[in-house]
Image (cartoon, rainbow, N blue to C red):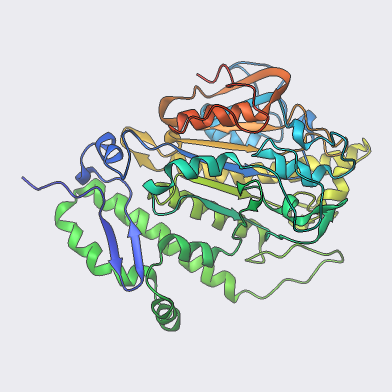
Length: 444
């Protein structure tokens, strides 16, 4: 009888280390999960995705509650994963409100979204908010994976300057906070993220790979070949698909690096890599999926655009800036363009979720074992209100979340009550976080 493959097997080569997803040769999936470093159950992953400037709420909020709701226009792209989607209505980020501090709703919206803390109004170095939910989880379980957490986004993080009515740029470009005074910058270059996930060794090793323009897979090919006698047909297919996904991302990164910059629009456009914005988002989606699939990390944040972003979207026939349009003054044409941008973002989110749904883990899928929160710290961008936020919770949290519903909570229910509930399901229970008042009811 063939012995079981070690559940901690990695493929190694010069300056590269590739963690493996679950394979049947490792034994039952639950056993694989339980023997990951520090694990005692199927690993639950959590991610927080953020899209700025609020939503056109009339095209976001379902009219019916419970399981019979119809996906509105903005959420229609989620139809393929509808059974995993909970639409949560009535949640509020109170600390994104002025509370005596005057203008600055965009900066506060992002800074308070995962912290539930009132950011100090300053554009100097004395910034202060609070620890974010992702970093609470990372501090508790980060030692069980290669990376404690992964912070990514399409726009770079800025830690200095005045970006919103006297608020530091750190607030409107950083969603993750390791402590009240330590924002965690996000990576927006897919090549650097790829290196962080898979490369090991010293700078000389990485420089040698770059000079030779060889795939990371070339350096672990011998290790991969040695696994073949231990793998059945299903495992060989699963491993081939996993390695092919890695190579596909490498090729897309290389292709993007060779592409010329497109003609610049008349307005300032945020920097992005690659120049095709949808391809940039999808590369980042694929990298996050790989990080979860291989259990490189179980905690991530992903910011589609910095808060207050004025990026135009000409490829979906929206040439005005996003932030400018969000101040629509109830102009119906502008509101429809905002809904078009909102739907574009949800379409990219749906792409990522479909990828997770297609990855088998034991008797379920990767998406079954995830909790993915998606939302914004503003509700209606024109009003700059922070109650009744647009929030989704997608995934089943290894059976701890009942999905496929529209759940309406009493307005002004703290958003941080949801974060506490998610931390519980990660096995990282804390008694309070930011302005939380308890756990969110009715998730199971």
